[in-house]
Length: 150
Length: 119
Image 1 (spheres, one colour):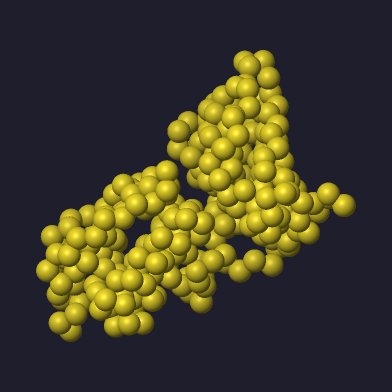
Image 2: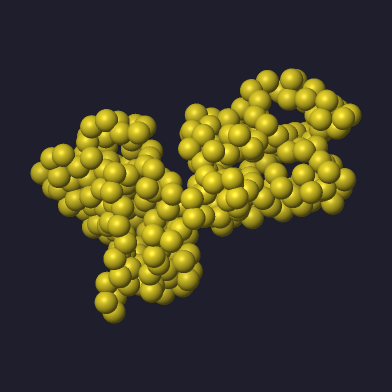
């Protein structure tokens, strides 16, 4: 496991880290997320939800985007705004269309073994969008606003 | 911390005390192999004690579903015991709370298997 990046200074509002595309680094991303979300002012429950959204995004990036290829990278970007936290996760894959994913809560999907990751991200975050960045990969943007959550 | 599991036979039920992380990769693989192993030994009544599970993700939830359907297909029953708040919330959000038989008292959970299997 690589050492964590320098802790945020009080005046900083952006944290960026590039991680090897390895499942071991999901826990590194979780720890960074907890610290950033805490600095942004989210309570413990919200920190856990944001952490889980990043966890699922990292899994998607490493497993589905980068096809578990350790020579590839995942780029994580956190920006703290006065009223929200914006998180971007970029892989080197060809992307996916989140608008065509089935609802895992429907009776016919309830016993499916997969298909809940994006649903959880959408549940835990206020905004979620996916963009294919030409020639470089796929970028997921998630926003959590400070204030009443789910 | 990866997943750890301790197996305790209680009456006709196999109680599995699970701790750590049930996430994509090692945790999910371990759980899958554990269930497969128990089924191959003819242990079809399985109670998963999740009290010490520190983290579960969408893949871990999928693995619980897979275990549930796998055990059911063999004519057995898989039930859950002692959910943490985090796991409880995830099962509520995903509507899986309606699928699993969830208990917070081990003795009662063990007793419920007798009712299920004597039917």
